[in-house]
Length: 458
Image 1: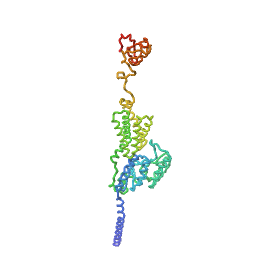
Image 2: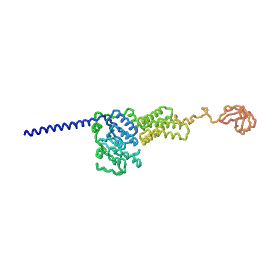
Image 3: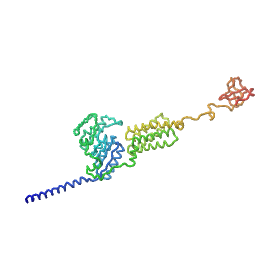
Image 4: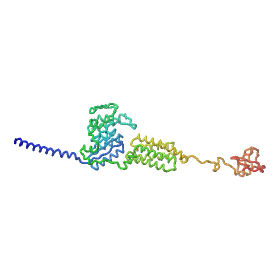
């Protein structure tokens, strides 16, 4: 019995030593893994992908570098956007030395899928989706240009292969003609369809690395401290810019701008409509400029367009200046918007409403219209000193001599002036003394001097 006890004691000592040894190697390693250096910097990607978002994200990556962040979390919920801008954002993500996680908290649709795929990790919230990245036009119809589709498909597949994800699935997100087998989720993508994956499906096929519910869970998953999470905020100017570039707001600004300028041009004299219209255009182009959507060329096109339209009113050009001005103005407005089709729709609505308002104002204030500069509005009546013919009441009662026979019309010298005269039907010979009996409009009526006893008619 004592032998057994003596045998157990060294075994207990040995087990305790082994546990201590394992703890010495494992526990410090675990502590080190849970304490990665650097803060977690969250950049919201929650709007259509355009130049404004690109500028916003560029500022975010720069700030993350300045605070020496250890991880960047792109919190994605976007319907997609411009392919060219998406590629530039993707290049920025891949060039960053800070690891990036695409946390899809909603939809990473269309171009949003590409941003997720080029990131180092993909985490998804339970109700989120990724995919449906086929190219569409402004009317949301699929684009079937083989070259464009092939290029975009290659970009998506290259982004997928970057992190060892199946490129066929990325291709199926973009190409309607592909057939893609996905045995992990017992699903086949047929022709005419595009792939869109739920969070659970994405995890099964390797298009998500983790399902989480918040940036804090993303940080904990990758062993960063949840206590050092910073979310990027929009500046005041960026908030104002986002408001001004909203499609509804931009349409209202265009309406006010067009109406104000046209009212000032065609119904001048108010001053206020012109000022308000000019300020509306300043807000439209200013919001676009701050958002990074439109550059200084949009201002140039706008100013040139207005100048040409004004010139058309005063310089006869057979409409050439007007057409060039309208083209310049429309080009400036479209380039200042992130989406061409949206800009054209907004411009069409604003222009139609503005023209209707200008017509109403022109009718109400017709006496102020610019057309009055080209129309003679004075009534040239006799009581205002106007006459279509020269009347000669000043000749009444004056004497003269006929220089031609008056049968009954002819010519006479009255005073020192030769005047066309008529009689009341009688015949008067040459060199007969006469006097002016009366004047009827342009008719100077004369009689013989021998009839002078009658009163003249005044």
